[in-house]
Image (cartoon, rainbow, N blue to C red):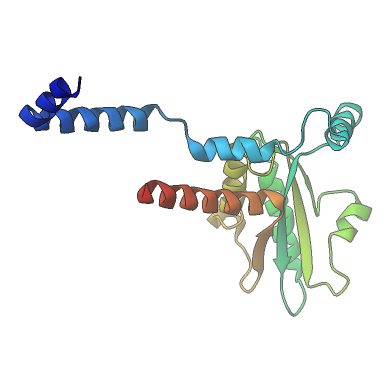
Amino acid sequence: MMDPLRSIVSRRPGWVVGTWFVVAATVGLLSPDLTRLAAEGQAKLLTGDSESLRAALQVGKDWPDQYYESLAIVALHRPGGLTQADHAYARRLSDRIMATDRPAAVVRVLGPRSEAETAGRLLSRDGTVELIAVHLGQPFVSPAAHKAVAWLEARSDPAGLARPDGLEVHWSGDAVLGMDFMADVQTSLDRAALVT
């Protein structure tokens, strides 16, 4: 039984190697995107019957204007205290985030354009930090949330917004951390693929 196989391998080694390359390329091209699968798996940490998920879905149903799945935070900081130009920049940035060309994942912004009580709570007591909270309608590790975060970060410093000199802009929130997490997952998968 092994004689015919041994004969093919020894007489036509180029064909055997070529066949293996074709099989490997086919498997590589048809295999699923492991990063996407990891993101989808991480985004669904709770089962459908978990109390937390049911409560979150009920909040979304009863108060759709208050529901979101993940959050990106922009912290505007000036060590000596925010200036009027800094507050004006915060308003422009908030307006830019809510522009009509924003990603569908961006649900709402809490910041300087919010009700006075909410806006006041987003300003530090010492006047050195102002926060802008961006609610996203996608899980924190989803590709749509990552695209939205990348879009948000790109909007914080275009020429049209004219960020004041000395104003620091920092990003945080579970959506931002999720993007960093998935980048690390991709690096790990790439290393594992290289080793195997």
